[in-house]
Image (tube, rainbow, N blue to C red):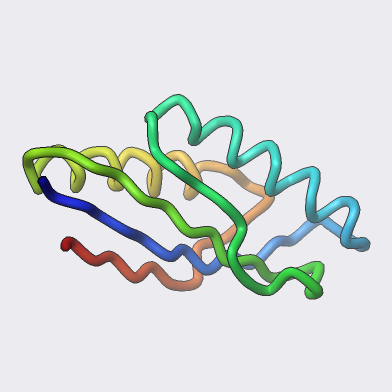
Length: 92
């Protein structure tokens, strides 16, 4: 069993309040949910222009997890409301 984790640090361009930030993050999380991964906002909860999202996936193959993560990163990168600042991936 292979467990893959990723922490994605994001800069948000459009929100001016925490409520607007949460709406954007909720939208991203719902789109990413189709990949059958566990996902949650894990950091920068009090800053309306920054966010950290944690993702976990389980598979029997590292290539499968890499493909899933790359698809997720591409989908987030296509969203004009956010910019990926940093990604930390780990396979256990």
